[in-house]
Image (cartoon, rainbow, N blue to C red; front, side, top):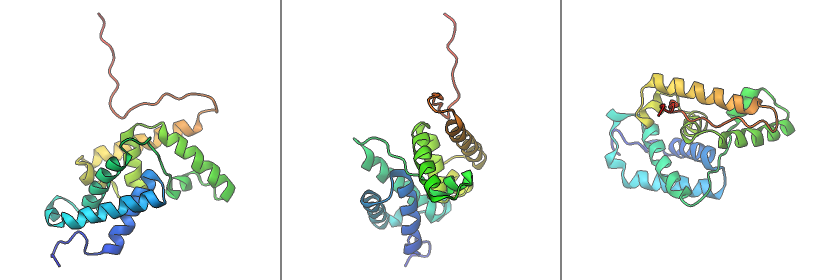
Length: 180
């Protein structure tokens, strides 16, 4: 076994990849297929892993992100919701949690793709900001700010009165049209 083998602890790798994938596309057969494909690619390309570029989890999540993109081509975006996001709401009644899950899923669909990815990495893959920064090749501070904004945006959407359309904003700065 390689000294810096990214699959040294396969059970943990599979658990983390599946959690991330299930958060992104929902649990079930599709998540299992994507997880399997991710682990298969990781096995095939494990010699390309460079421990100096980041931890194994970041490398695996990068592969999973590409497999998800391949999987979702031609499909609509689907968003799964992790209990960690629901716990932020503080409601522990099971019926209310089901309703909250539906509300959060709908709100997540109204976020831009970058925000959805950040929240999936944070709550689905259970990565810390530093690890997300490694996966996305960003600075840790930028990830922390982007996560804060994504959570704020999600909360804004969730707190909007029913029927009140809160416009979807992207993470990129808005440009103002120039005068003719």
